[in-house]
Amino acid sequence: MKSLIAALTLWLATACAAAPSEQLQPRVLNTNTVLSADSVRLIGRFDTRVSGQAAFTWPGSAVEFRFAGSTATIRLASSADIRFLLEVDGQPSELWVKAGEADYSLASGLANATHSVRLTRLAESFSGVTRIVSNPVTDGKLLPPPAAPKRRLLVLGDSITAGYGVEGASKSCSYSQATSSPVLAYAGVAARQLNADLHSIAWSGIGVWRSYGEQEPANPTIGERRQLTLGDDFNSPWAVTRYRPDAVVIAIGTNDFWQGSAAGYRAAMTQLVSQLQTDYPQRPIYLMVSPMLTGDARAAQQADLDAIASGLVEVIDLGKIEPADGYGCDYHPNVITQQRLGEALAQKLENDLDW
Image 1 (tube, rainbow, N blue to C red):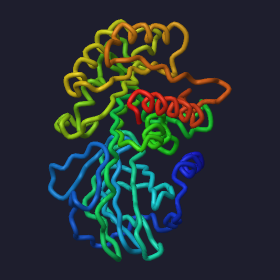
Image 2 (cartoon, helix red, strand yellow):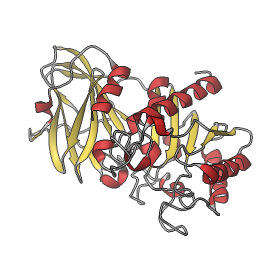
Image 3 (cartoon, rainbow, N blue to C red):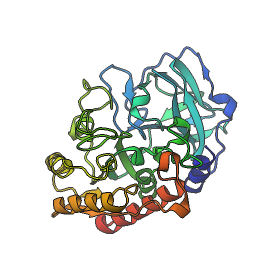
């Protein structure tokens, strides 16, 4: 968590103090107001089929709002304990939403003024579903939510994009919500640097042809899960018209090549690219070489991607893990590597899209 706070403080160093940690425990407060779209801004994929609620699972999904007053509370319901990043006037802190339904104090003891709040899910979809079940409640009044940025990114990825182990101390740790953060992953870094909205459709271990540990395809691929509003609910189809990205990044291949080769990778990636071109015509699509692959496996992935690239489809190599920089959990990129990758992606998009 120290690396999360330190990194975000560099990006988000604005004026007001964060809510005290003792205020971040769930309290049952009898909140009655239901969620309304004109009171908050939802960032990412949210299932709003239940009136007055918004369910979400994808890492990096966020809600933000503004209010005039000194305190703000929101009611959340969760199927499991889920880790969040809370930012009050740009100042970051950690919030764990507990299983069950309760009201959470997001801000308390602030100056009676205008404040902004952003709550970002750090956990992956398989950790459980969280629902927003009320408007924020304040001791003053809600203001119109922040305007959406003009720039929009869609990134399809695996554990690297989800920020698996990015806050881990070394390669010896294994998966934990406490050490994983999409905000500190390369896509999150680039989106903040570019002031762009980001839909991060990421799932650890997933591939475009097969997932980690599989000899032949068995579990849902990124091509299947990308079509879902809730990452593990196949009864929650996502309508592509709800979000029109300016650019698409596909960072998939680490798990397809987990044994060094992937016979079905090129065909599966070709199909995914074709589908994305249909969904988002005239949008650039970037095929990212995995920073975790090395040697022959890395060369094989790049050869497959080079064979697909044409026109608005381009291969990008943002770099790889350098042993001198250290590792996150299970040999994943740590904060140093993810920051470097994110800055490289931001520079590429700035140059290509005139951002």
